[in-house]
Image 1: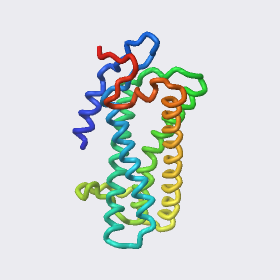
Image 2: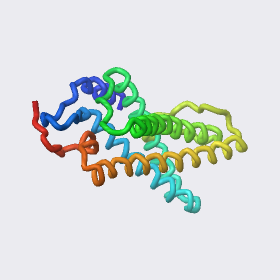
Image 3: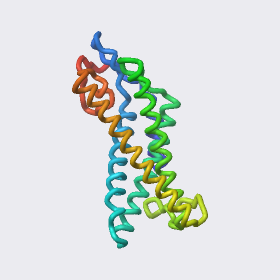
Image 4: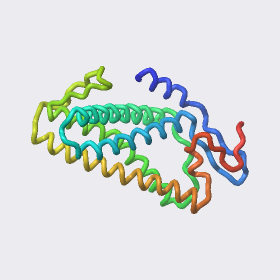
Length: 207
């Protein structure tokens, strides 16, 4: 996993490609950035879905197995988010899409809040597991160190925090998706195409 993430970051330095259409200022994200974005999105959807489903189950081998999968997905999201932040710091991002300044500021704020939650949410789950005295063993192979001593009261508080962060992430993702659809369906611009794989925007021509 570590070598795969390093390869992703190393190949992310390819220059973004620009639409040749004179009326468009579109700058697409690199293939690496697109792949990381959609892989993270798929894992977030899986983690949130598993979390909502498994909490209502009675204690059973199935519930324990789902909790393990949920933790593995959370650790993977943390690693991918760290890789994306490193890539962003090293290579930057394409220029902001055109539009009112308040929309650009709101989009930037939403992106940074998403990153904060993508880091903090898995860490809160890790802290919660440590406080409950249940170790996190990544893919059943790598045991992560306990971050806290066992403490039931603290674990219950961290559980509430974990749930609050999860619902906050769901809300931010919903806003992010709604904004992308608004650009695509109402504004009829190419903003969504910047992050869509295998889609050629209007006026696109490979350099």
